[in-house]
Length: 287
Image (cartoon, rainbow, N blue to C red):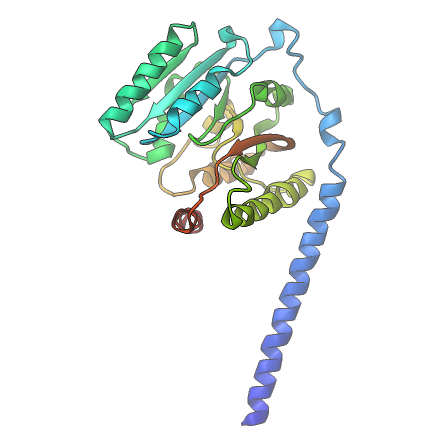
């Protein structure tokens, strides 16, 4: 009996070591791919934004829901985006249920409209499909050939569009995804741990996979889609919590290419309390 238990324990231990070994080989492969990726973007075809005829029309979508504390900062940041106004549209997809927040958002949008910015406040009668439903609703009337998406806590740099939309010169590219940054990385030990874990994903894993043409996913924000790609892949669907992953894989199964830009960082805030971080991780894993 004792000998049998010993064999079982050794078997479990050996299997675990073997799995760890295979995982390590996979990570090593990603590292090799990552190191060999440096020059790919340098030789990629790009739009010449100095030529007015090559500047594509872009729609920025901002899906928000009761973002009382960050919506003003978001709108101020996006309004500073350096891109020809005649080629830029901004959709604030506001599913908020807080009347005061809605009114304040509407007031800020009106003030921006008076500056000549093409920005629209889009409200729905119901929240069917949640974020995916809001994105799908906005897409129906979007003027742009390319759709940039930012969650409420993301703050792209003023030249973000100029660094990303240029890669759609390659007509096979359906998505350009940028790397998440962290405004409050050094706030606490918790934020430092989260930043470390996310950085590993957004550098080694995403770049390593993308370098060899393996599937990667749009991360729900801080990226830009070709409108044709969204429609060809079946559009946004709200039947899963991870609508970004769902549409990403459907698009790549349709042979659309994804481009990941490690050098373009889009900063955002990390959860600063353990309950918020746990809730975020639970949602991602449940999806």
